[in-house]
Image 1 (cartoon, rainbow over the protein chains, first blue to last red):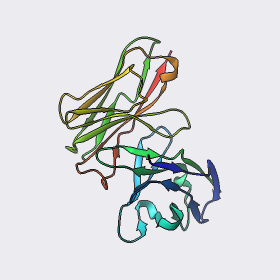
Image 2 (cartoon, rainbow over the protein chains, first blue to last red):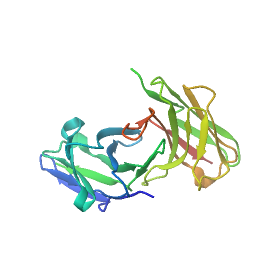
Image 3 (cartoon, rainbow over the protein chains, first blue to last red):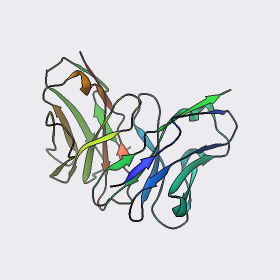
Length: 113
Length: 114
């Protein structure tokens, strides 16, 4: 069965600084990987996804993620964060068929002035 | 805009009193999912419908049931809510084939059990 590890529960970043959120996955075949963001009291919004091709994928809101098979990682990055980026970020992997996503435990991003 | 809509946003029920949460979609997606998300935790898949085929996760309690009368609607029924069932319930959809198709989430229903 697939699994996802997000090692950082909380991360604090200054506004305007760069950001990297870590994600490691475990899956036997080629993984289908996703990053979602969740603002307080809201549903999940898709930031970006990877399933093949270029290992650097671009998403919405200026986010990007890089798939590294050798490290089983799919880290999320943003060159300059904005206060509105404060939220919970979930990395997820998808198995076969109509299976739903398996989520990591999330990383809570705090933006300080 | 096409979307996934969950009603109500907030639901309060009493311990042991049956409650139904609803989800509708205008995306015409084949697959609909229900997730449970407890405070500060990751969403946990309860079950999903692939067209009319119901697929229950092995560890989903019998207390949780679902109905999908048509493509657009899906319901989550909690037959006898306990205090531990207080959570955010998220509905999501995806197309078929599904592997590289993302899930589209509604804004969730926050359930309180008193």
